[in-house]
Every structure is written in structure tokens, then in C-alpha cells.
Image (cartoon, rainbow, N blue to C red; front, side):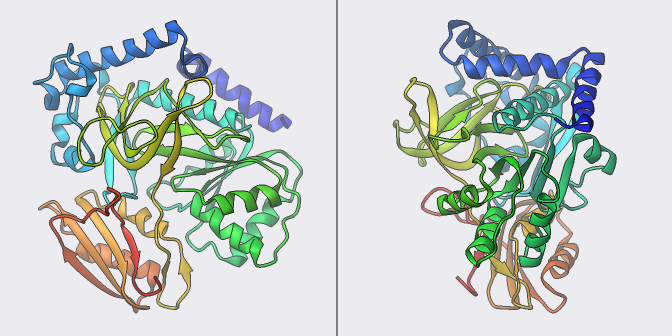
Length: 433
């Protein structure tokens, strides 16, 4: 590591030490549990985490008041964002020791903008998860990392925090050829080791940039981690070949944290974060386990959020679970959210994530679907609570992104329909399908 990176690295762990080492203790626990899945002590510890959580929710969380702690997890109901939003207060623990809370929000990549709260222990756990999985991708605290995503007033980092974490915020709202060229030139300015965390769709843009004839200079990357969306295998190969580094898919969400990650090379299996979550793959039409190797709904139980516990939470994703050569459960595939491309009124391609990005502030929206009907005509289907009265503000946000001459139609619906796959398509382009 460079001297300044080493200073950042050591400063982080020293500050954690002054707080009683909460991140380090969680990090050691995560490392042990994930690297010793079949060990008797590991199994007993994971079972104890689950049992303690169920005891907590059955006695302090109103939504689960009719469920006994002695019941098995499978006797608790499967919930999703819509269920939680409609019963919001009932999902909050009445235990006063967990009242120190932190808000997290998701942009609504399943069509449901969403927020929930985490207690301090869950926050420490998430930080430790992030450190552990970053190290698995070759990135240590203090190293320079470029984060490619839509940055807005809802998620932008404080400049001081960004400097301390050595995170470079690369906005992808208009990630065209010129912006990609500037970004790659920035990467190649020095020969220091660095990492990239990126939405998979941004890597698609870079792959298309390469296919159009542009060359990639030496960037000295430790790895590229793709998150939030399905990573196209052709894109993965192109990026790996031209950047001379591993491209790793990570499975996570904003409201919970990191669920799984691939290894740098070799198998494309996703290794699950059993240290922090309990995983189930359920059939599409009923709440029973899917067969080994069968696609099903990803349902998770968060073992560490005690303020607003997440029990048997349907993430909206689809995966196939099997076992690797060591008989450890892995996800063989994850069918993440793949959004249609959309265009502004000038006919310019823009990131669909720009739309989901500003939707996170409209918490009264239960579900949404955005449709491009023509070059300048767009329809937004909304399923909202009765308190929603921000239609004009929403239209203004859309016009700011797509063009002042855009024609926006709002339709209020009872439900945004599911596809046959069990997923909900939220960005549709009928103009250039």
C-alpha cells in the first residue's frame, strides 16, 4: 500500500479500537463462519444467532406477536417490501436498547422504493461484511476505489468521508463515450493498485466502448466488482481481457447488505454470506423450498438487524441453489434485475438507473413501472399510498432527466403485474424495444 493508503488503513482500525473494536470483532466472526461452513462450532453459532433473533422478534416486534420463539423459522410468514410498507410500525422492535437507528433507502429496482432502519450492531456488521468481501476481491481499507453508480442528493458521500475512505464517485447518469474515455484516462494516470465497484450496466457501456475500437491503457486494477444487476457473460470476458483483471459479481441490496460474491477466477458460483444471513430458495407459487438446481425466489433472514428485523424477506430476485465440490451450498445463478435501455427526448441513451435513482425519495410509492412509449412520450404507472401528493414533483424530476419537452402520463394502478418468471419489470422501452 502507498503511505497515504496505509495511514487511512491504520487510522480506520485505530478509531475502531477506541470504540471497543466492534468492526474487528464482527470481521473475525464473519471470516470464521464463512470459511468454516461445515465446522460443528460454526453450525452451532449460526443456529444460536437465528434462535436468539426469533426469540427477540416474537417478544418485541408487534408483527410477530402471534409467533412463538420455539417455532421453526419456516413457520414465520414470508414478507416483502409491500407487506412491510403497509405495516411499517408493526415491524419495529419495542426494545428500547435498539432505538439508536440509521436509515437506509433503496431506489426501487424492483419497482418498490423502500426505506428501513438498522441498529448500530447491524451497521457494524455491514461494515465488517464489506471489509471481508472487499478483501476477497483484493481491495483493502485505504486503497483507492472508483464507485460507478448514479450519485444524487440522496446518496452522495460527504467529501471528507469520501477522502477518508478513498472512494472516487463516478456518476453514470450520462455515461457516454466521452465520459467513459475521461474515466479510463483517470484510471491510467498512475500505476497504483486500485479497485472498481460498478453497476453491471455501466460495465456493459464500457464493453461497448471497447467493441467500437477503443483501446484500454494499463490501469493496474486489483479487481472489478459488479453489483446490483445481472452481469452479462460476454461483458465479463471483454472487461477481463482488456483490463487484465478479475471481474467479480457481488449479490447485495441496499436495505440489507452483501449476500454473496464470486471468487476472482475459476467457478462462477456465488459463495453465500452465511455469517450474516439465513438463505432460502422458495418455489414461485408457494412458500416451500425449491428443489436442488431449480430456480426459485431468494428469501433471506437478516440475523443482525434487531431494531427492524427482516425475517423471511422475499428480495424479488430469482436464483438457483446447489452444492459445490465441498458440499457447501452456493448459488449457481442469480437472475438479477435487467432494465431496458431508455432514451431522452433528443434520442440520447441514458442510464435507466437514473430513473430508479430519484424514485427512492418517493416513499409513498408502493410500486412503479416506467415505460417509454415514443421518443418524447413516457408513461409512469404508480401504486401509491393515500398520502401521496407529489405527482408534480415527480413529473419535474422526470423532465429534468429526459428533457423539458417530454410528455409524461401518470397512471394509478392497484398492482404492477409480475412476469411469468415471478419478477416485476419496472423499466420498459416500447419505442426501441
